[in-house]
Image (tube, rainbow, N blue to C red; front, side, top):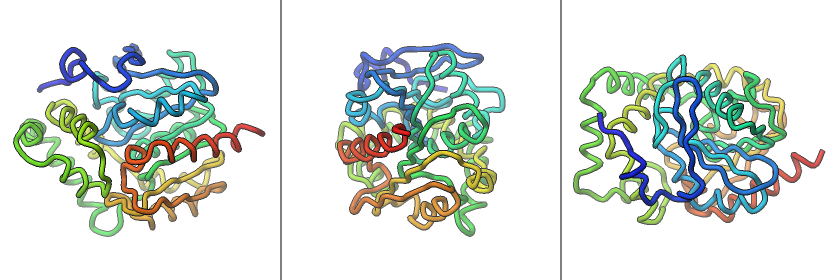
Length: 293
């Protein structure tokens, strides 16, 4: 399989100077650390990497110590945790990374599937933040047929050893990647941002990581545990999100004891890439309330 290498795909990676490589058991992490102040952990979603925070992280770093890893199977992080890329294993692995870095997060921020990992960390005792923010969070099972269809398709692709190469080949081929991103997410991001997604999806290791993560995902168990989330939570949702319906976000908010929803008109699934300053202001304001007690 082809792998994203730091010397090639990472040569001009966003916030390059903040990157470092950190070893834990079975994993070599690519992680970015910047800023000073209370620690904020940023967890990207399936198929993304640290580039997703390229504009938001520096804004948050004006007030916080920002920690943003590439999750296992994604970007420039290599290796797999014990238990593979299932949600509990990912949560435990990120907790191990924080321990190695010697950092204790005051705030967890997760986008899409990263929000699920963040809450799994809270529920399983791998992090004890004062607050949690989910950006277009994927916290509830997909409705109806999709609940069975999506994981099944991911498993079918994963067991086919040629599938990651096929997807990577399509990403390298001609076509309007920006139009595909907009159709899949409802977001309009700049060509530079689209280029980073295309760069990663041109490597079969990254594609395989995203497929493996989808195949192992269990949102039913997370949904059952949401009433046990014991930290103030804010769910920010773009009204034009083509991936996660508002009903899913409202359903999760109804289960989390201390939770509010912020709806952003005209923004899609990648709202934090479309309007990073607005998202930074919402996160900072909520963190100030959550950490003042």
